[in-house]
Image (cartoon, rainbow, N blue to C red; front, side, top):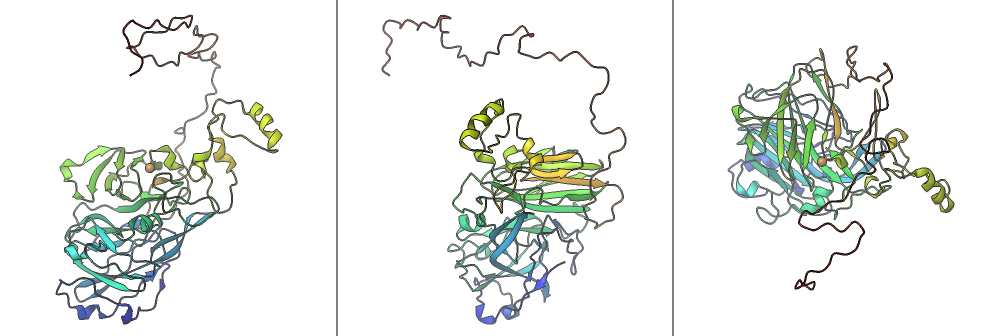
Length: 477
Ligand SMILES: [Cu+2]
């Protein structure tokens, strides 16, 4: 792990949150070091160093927070602070996060663990941390003003509770929520089952769905945007900046995600049907898991699905809303499909020399041109694979299933070597007659009728004369 160590936070910046647990507050008198990282790389899973065994998760383009044992308390230290996050190579964003990154580090614990989480606020405003989905004493729920005083800048609060449920959870602020989540403050919270054999998998990936509105050339998200975001991200990364899910053939795999954007995301994986195995409400009973190839995740929800990776290949995984597999610039580009752009270009070039219209045959051509925008933004679609431009951005990645990877090997194995004769190919046989078209001079149809007809209304006479008004009918209602 590429972690740096912070100094200890002085005891003066230290306040205990809520009354309640007879936890031995004296034990909390010294604060564990807060590990931090500047790297957006996916870091190796953090193997358990105490307590029951479990298969740790891999946080896509992220990491898990180290802890220390203090008596029978597992102690973590989160630092809420401004961070710089590389969204993808070529674009950095000035966000708020935890311990050097957005999202913050994943917190992993085991069902039944007593955890003590120190939260230091290095933001310019109040914050508070909510532990989404976990059962805990009300005063540890992290809703500023309701269940605890807000954590003022410069102060450290302590959360103490038992991880009563195993499963897939997250943490996020409940203090100036709109701003702090739009700025990237969030993190995963995974609680492993106490029984190491329960629903165990070989590889377990986690990511949070988030979205930003960052104008091309600027660095700070517009926090008031409600719907019109221009960067759709997983763990604050956009394709091609999202690492692949590297998997050994025949591994049991789990993929878990949570949605902290302002809209739902149908997450679709190619190559397999999977079983939906859990939500932030808990595990789906094993004989009630259901098969899908896409699973919608509404705002504020989490989903996990499991599959056996028995089909080798490079399988796409993405949000099925096609606007969410696009990066910045997408929304103000006009639709020119079907427009003769030569003619258009001639006319526009008179007022704007060098003008180049895009997209009369679709927009795929942008993928290969990687249109150069202003500095610090991402092309709308970008990323190459072995057969050419991928023509996507945003919420897109690849599940790379390979023969013979060692357990714990998450290095990108490169592109899949397809067995001979298993790739779609160009037809080069005997030339066929031109395929008939639905409409056109030879089809017997002069034109396609686009009019939507309302069967309740009489058709207009062919010569266009208006229909006679029925006596007694009123036109003024
Ligand atoms: Cu989406």
